[in-house]
Length: 256
Length: 283
Image 1: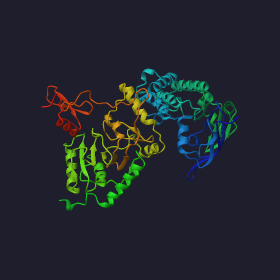
Image 2 (image 1 turned 90 degrees about the vertical axis):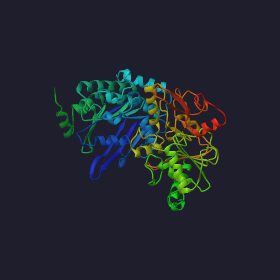
Image 3 (image 1 turned 120 degrees about the vertical axis):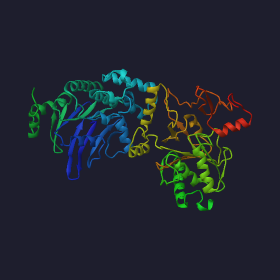
Image 4 (image 1 turned 60 degrees about the vertical axis):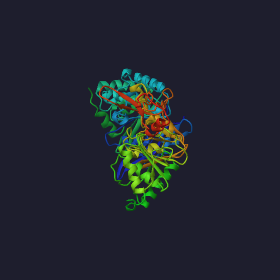
């Protein structure tokens, strides 16, 4: 089986500081990988390097493209990488404001990716936008409202709709539930879990919330100081942490 | 007075620099070529870009026509025409057919332009993506990568808000299947005329950009399959010359709601009146 995404020896440094160092893993179709670690451990750097937002200093990011099989996205041309970013990839930002156009209506936000890949039929675009607003549980009557009038949870769900509308195969998520209150978090997680299972998506989720990975991720990677210190099946890592740092992380979770 | 100025005001070195930008623009239709825009003896926004392009294009044998919103007799048109009469000593005219260089603000003359004529546009904001993407670095990247999905988002927003594409001027076009270009704030009625036999040059002085369309370049107005582009105008006949196929201005005539529609192209209207056409409001 060919991995959908194969990260090999990925390294990024900021001058003397290490962003992430020698990270390697494979992600198979339909699999969800969680990356946890404290702030500054390099998980966001790693995610941005994988998604093509940051150029890594060394290493390869092989993605199994639809037409040409595995390609190194680090060395592919900018137009090709942007095309992937609009079709097969999706990126859910921690802050919805980074991933949405706040001055454009909800429907326009969802439709943008469709129009970027060549959709030129207004009725079809609008129908797709309506369908997706429904799927992420946003009242379709609000299709012409701007996201600035939406609550934080709605903005995050709109961002997810906007990303998934082109039927991507790989979703990068950076703290998708950060900054939301727990009941909204729970609904969002429920929605994400449903979508991931329904669409057979592969995903890489970066978070510091262990509950999120427990619910969503099949496999878990623990990072500290830019390096991977432990990997394994999520339940295995969380129930029987081997590395000292992972043990600390797991034991630091408040039990209510 | 002419002897006090270099021909057409600008020095020769500057004109060469502008001509190089124009030639590059013609070679890559629709691409915005940066150029070192000079201070001109008029405020930005009054056509400093157009004036510099005209100055670099004029030869002593040229006949110049200047229009502002189609009219030859408005402040901007009169002062620019006088400026070149004085600094270049070129012949001037109000007749579209007699002119070899036409500088325009916000209109294309009604009479079809022919081979050998040059139409110079004054452009306030050359970047069609500007109001959607404020970063110049990003918009240049978008042009380079032909990443134009965002342009349709603007049209989508129009339809969702108004039920139709409400953009009525500065309507974005795609040039020769490649660059998306701002046609300057001409009414969208004029968009189809941009596929013409004359050379079209666009100058933006404040924004320091020149772009161009060689003759017979393919210019497509962006649209949706189910909301096709439509060149619109006021649904009236000209009150003075009774023309039904020219672009009309609405003129308020009194405080009682009286109004009339007249051709915005004054030369076209007066030529028709001289030929005997008479509208319902003609004296």
